[in-house]
Image 1 (tube, rainbow, N blue to C red):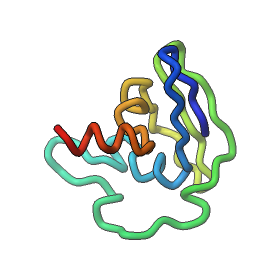
Image 2 (image 1 turned 60 degrees about the vertical axis):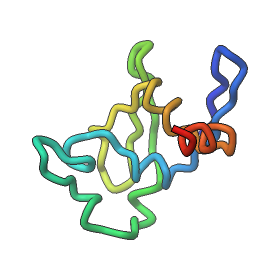
Image 3 (image 1 turned 90 degrees about the vertical axis):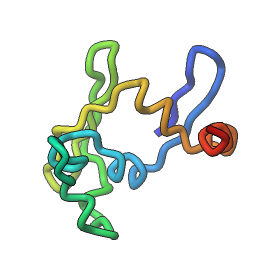
Length: 95
């Protein structure tokens, strides 16, 4: 998935990265408890294959994964913060 940002920056995300960074409580955890992704080191093919993606207002996107998971809403600010390009990775490492 590629996003062209208003400032001209372009971010390209692979689906595996997006699934690992799923922000929902089930995957990421909540109330100080780890999510289910904290206890695994590998994702199945169904966990990283999309069946659909929809916009959530002007806020973000919601992917629908082949394994049936669809509760993660990725805000645009989260997507920009996890941009995997070398420039953004270097900026994150510097902070």
